[in-house]
Length: 392
Image (cartoon, helix red, strand yellow):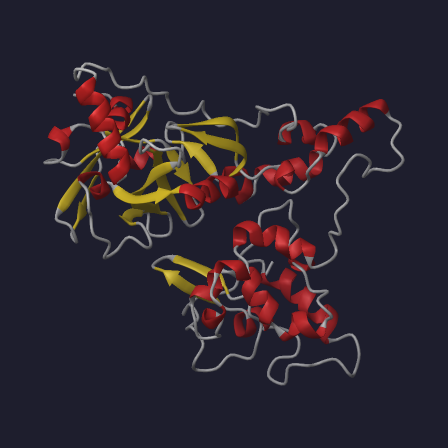
């Protein structure tokens, strides 16, 4: 049986021009040229800088221990893993998944080199490697494999099957239902190329560059330096104990302005990720695009755009999805400050979140709070039913 790395070399994704070029080279070279030696998957993720311009979050934690310890419990610290050690790996031991739509069955093999999958009847039963596990596991984990296509454009496969934590089971990856397979390798998943693939890695790593079928300069996960740029000169100045202030050496950013929302929107999806015609209150897609929804809210507009992500969320901590009372206190800071402030006629002191920002299911077992804060009506996406807020 072929090793998983040999499959990447054996089954590259080929564009038409790339396929013809490689076939021509192979033919005129006497059909004896060996395939390029593949590279293995990255080392198990660690908070270690691979480039001198990055320090790594652990280095930041030497001075900012409180923030670093909070960060380690957040989803941001777990956005990318090697399939050698990702959460829920044990669930795939001996697991099979039946793809009813395409009448195929996936067989999974967690190995020391990473996860492998076989689809009987394809490629002689050889194993296909699953290199990277995307996601913290709070909602789901999706697998991606880099598969060069013979061009300079990065290419990869988003695996057709994901692990859904809320259901504690595997299922078809969102967006892949109904997609045809134009070449056999697409039975393993959807082809992603170019900037789209690069954006996937940009939002799940602090540093990393795609070269062929591997990443270089990899710092996995969304670390401190994903938001705090120019940290190396800051650390150097602080080590010398002669900075003018605690922000010395940092790129100056207006954190308390709408620029903060744009920083979050790079990965949590802003208005450049959606057509203007799709920004409607009944579109459930907007629930997933929290910065877009927030920007439509009267709370945001009428506050003079002072309502920011950090108004409610500490960016260093895990977003507490059920700590309802903490978020309602934020609401009441504005909605009870004076007799002239807007007061809810139904429940002026509680229930703000469940009424005006309920959780909406966008995929079975995956739901998000709707950040388009408003008085809801029958045209809005239905809220998750039967959910009890934990008031802590």
